Length: 287
Image 1 (cartoon, rainbow, N blue to C red):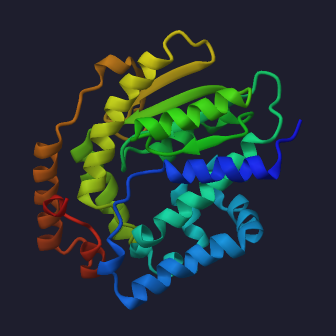
Image 2 (image 1 turned 90 degrees about the vertical axis):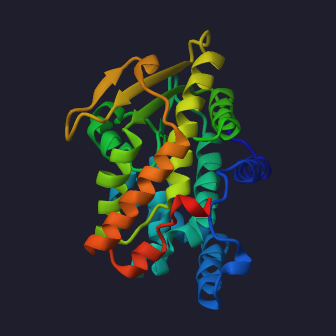
């Protein structure tokens, strides 16, 4: 059975409408060049979608297009490839692209017993690395949705659409101590690639995702089609361990924000990140 293109389009619009909270700069604050970059990728997604799908499926971290994530979709933008610090300017269009691909994949009749996997966790938690390590066990999974699951309404909508499509759901929650994730995950990545994550969004994803996991565990506790796996990635490289969800602590936003601001200042003083990258690394005082 195939679902009509009209319904695919409706699913896509709904998913876009309930997507992540917008942490990008207000358009009124953008320079003419920033607006041009933003619009250019939006036009690409709208007008060159089939070609972008082909390119996305060939990206090395997408497992032939089975893994859906806006971080990967950013790489479809020539402006991002030239300057990764523009990531938050084009994030909304990257999410739109992924929402559309998700709706299209759900429209395909599932195999018997097919399971869809969502990876969730705060920024810098090591979701991509963990999924790579788990990839052999996920070889027969057709859809791996890499997101933060930091908004309960968005998370429930994704899960409900999967269940209604006839697929079971596994949520893999990757936890990493949030300050350590910023210092040893976000900042080194920014220094290496130029792709930044502002302090407000980092804190938001870590604080809210932990709460959302409790809400999902409670909501689907008696649904045999749903499972939630928690992985602690705070023990060092290659030391991930599966743990009980109730053993994972709840990050405290205000204290975490102050600690991250201090680390941003230290990185600036030590010259670990160039001025352009630092300029895109929003401190929590601007939340």
